[in-house]
Image 1 (cartoon, rainbow over the protein chains, first blue to last red):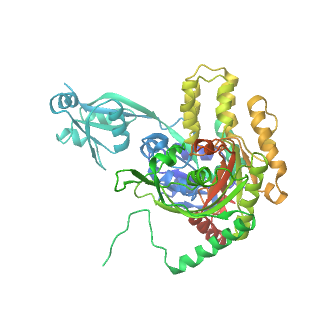
Image 2: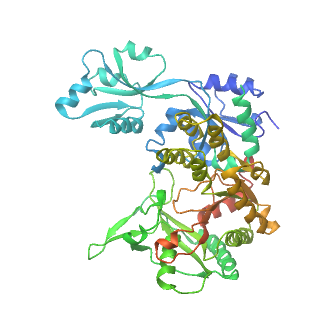
Image 3: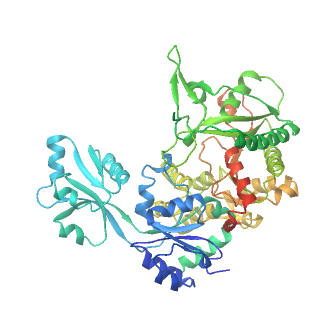
Length: 219
Length: 326
């Protein structure tokens, strides 16, 4: 058996990729091709499939992968209303891997906060985000009316053009926000990489998963 | 012309119906052979009647009003309607009572997730047979049903719904903190559970137990080396296990963290897993307090299988998919 005891693992491309591959290499997986070939998606010989982070819960929930690694931001966005939410992914969240740390924030243009002004004078603030469900929940929980505008690309553009008064976005260093003259008004939640597992694999492959967990905890 | 139907519902055409029919006929045969009489109940019930049960996450999702303004709901499972039938139609009948059903149930869905709004369930209810004998009987029928339809790789996860709540009480978790911890477990969120536990004023060993016990799953060895509350639940599970036919016992995986999202379970709970499917095919458990809410207090146990999931798993086994899980 391979270093992951024959488990199929969903690996996120993008910001978490480098550290995830280092983690797998640390477990003894031969990651040479994974590092060198960024066009390939399926690495059957080492039991790895690669995809964008937001697809990881989908593949793990369906059982196409036994376990996977993705950001807490992705998990929160796909389960923004807790256990009663039918959108909640049916996956186990097993371990906080600690890397990929960043913060979900509410930010707006520097100077007097245009969001509070809008709230005071218009009764509603417009908020652009790639995380509509996290944004909606945060604003709901803090008792503010908001109109959520979902965008797919650079969120920073939205307040600069006057389309919205604020954004909800993920930031690691704050550089992008500063470059666009945006300042953090509220920190919503800290996000790190998480190890998740398919609920059936968690029972039928219990030993393999627990051994892997033990090695990851002992890192 | 294309005329749409609601997402999460579908037409079942003859090729598929023929295959589903073979499964349901086989299941019905097994249930009847074991003495479980088939019944039908209305898909629509009074909301006020079904609301007597604690459905937690499986609350009925669809409501309509009848001509007199009474709220009706589409049933979300068959266990609660059968509890109503027992109290109403069998108020004095000598227990145990055995019923089976093949019926459509209705659940709320999130769009674009491929979740069914209408699902066909096949199941049994054994009313008036306490643990452990009643539980063992139902597990025997469950395995006979799965064997008869030809499912090969399945396993039964067996847990106890009262274990984690008793563990929290026994280890001194304040009453108002318990729902949050239980919610993390129901959510399958062990990272969240750990964070919640660190926020509480608990000793290190208590915290460790609350985090470690629900992650224990595997063969009979997980029942060993337990003390206190865990030992009580383990003893209950072992009692059931000892009554099982060896053919059934070899399918069992003990799972001390198994919790079902429906609220009315009181003791043993179980789920059916197959390597060919990423989600449980069905499940069930003991609901010793549900019948009392309808006015005929009897211990009870039952299970429901998702017929479509069973069909998918059978086809998956046939094609040899899901091998990565086996």
